[in-house]
Length: 398
Ligand code: F3S
Image 1 (spheres, rainbow, N blue to C red):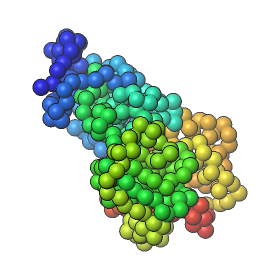
Image 2 (cartoon, rainbow, N blue to C red):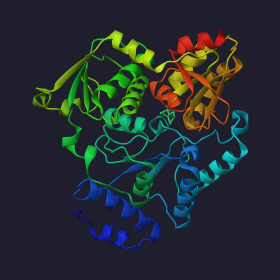
Image 3 (cartoon, helix red, strand yellow):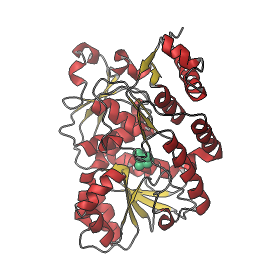
């Protein structure tokens, strides 16, 4: 039986308007399904389901209805990528009819008071939850980063549940919101040398395949940078449903894990050859791929690296880099955007290669350094090659 406070009863009863009541109904139903005893206040939300490609007309109608009913975010709420760069969509080749619907989606969110960040890395543009805080984040890569690296607590929310949490400031207390669900379930001993982000992405992909939704405890990973952690988590969440990982000596909650919790856990070891095998399983033959970087959205450091590799080169193939507006602004100031674009590449904001309507835009082949991107593009029938950023830039410059 789910316990509600007086205030929550009032919200459910419609005293704070129909949008709040509808959102409470959803959260209560979810809590009952998962056996939650109560709701918990959340400090922020990150909302997915923004691209019109995924929403379709039914999703757009739902959002416009919510906005029309007076849905307003009462906690900080940021937005995942949309289906296009909100300014440069014509240049991307996005069809007019798609753009018109996408702009209506954005307008609906704006009406709800959601920050139009349009990025899957909100934590790179100032949305950084406190360790131990309860949040309601959707977007599997952001969920993994938030839980594992930042130490905040969220389940893998959906678009509708993250909106409901933004509107009510509540979430049902179950899953990764509870201390006991955050303990590791299996140990992954990393014997492979991890140098590039591609290797971190491969390790995540392999781990997701091996563990499914079980929380991994990685041993043998030393000094991964922020970018490697985001690549690892994104891939873990792609092939499996991993929303939280621990890395010995690195991630925020490891010190709190009692040593007896690790005793007796099943162990896997991952070697260099396993990573290479993972890459060959996802790569197919491509002749003229569009190189796409930025899954998850590029950090400033990744743009600096791309700019360094591209400076003075002339690209023979298209190369698109995806990032957030916040990171783009700073990258522009530092000359990274100019370096990429002078070589013939494009740096786009608000969107990514997975949520843009690529097939309608005529894409058939792509190359990337992200297993998440490779998996999703393959699922869309786009042939993919995986490589490190340096390899992909080299191949694009020919
Ligand atoms: Fe982000 Fe798009 Fe990849 S939302 S994690 S860049 S699939």
